[in-house]
Image (cartoon, rainbow, N blue to C red; front, top):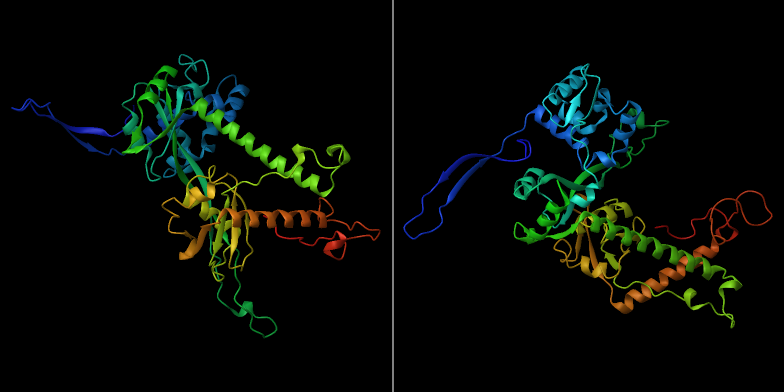
Length: 433
């Protein structure tokens, strides 16, 4: 554990055993130590060439293979984190500073002419996949920092790295109104102030889950058996190999569900004889599929003066729920200006579970600029009815588009685009989600 990764104990006072025979108390007074630029550089480059990252880093492996195992030093300036660490230096001095700092690294070897670096050959990558030595933990507060996590888990033998997991949230800043000037006037008539488009800003946020990499698989399993809570809250825990396998199964199930729905939709529009039984009905496998239950969320009291869009609703939903996988949005039935809408999720019973979260249990979803919408679940009967109406509309729109592409040329003899929706033209043919 380096100075960059942990707090340093600055005072240690031991009290002798008291008269009652209690265990001696140890008083720790801790102070945060701001790592130097050199320490940050070494820590970051050692991560790039470390056991957890190097085996899966295609860029480093490809460039090293081109230069007989050495990585060109000038390419280090392409790494965003190193650029941020050295941002206070002039551009010409950044690479020099990085290479000077790496002279003190045990893991990184710098070539004598300072033109290239590599991982120390005397410290080869361990055999096997780094995933077998890593544990997955979930259930942390979104405000936790890496230093806090390292300080807590450093007590486990062989702990090598803590990798925080992030997601990017797209925020839409409200459009700006440009003040009216003479340039806004045409032919002496006043025009309305120009409004620019929404500005998109991507914000990186902690997901509340981490990977901890250990030096050996045995150390990882021992730590996993001992870890139960963090800050008094229970943690979900898995070996990384088990976590990856679980996610692959969930992804495959979602893909199969989407494909089965597509096959059902295609079959309803024009079912081929090969798919029908002797009595002319569809085979059991092609019968109407049971819709998922507990997936619809009713949106109401949507403000029409805040520029609310489906994208804004989607992103604010993910912010409120904090779990894109569990509360994944399949589509949003809403058009700008509507007072009501429906949000459908991908996983069964996800809607009911989501509205028990602290951020939604009051029945309100917070949007931008202080706006909000009311959210509620449907009763089973109402949801089944709403789901059925939606599927019926989808089938009708599918048929209107000629069983597939709704745009392009008309289906009749006439050349060019059709004039109406029923002629296969470029009509919208219903809402898109």
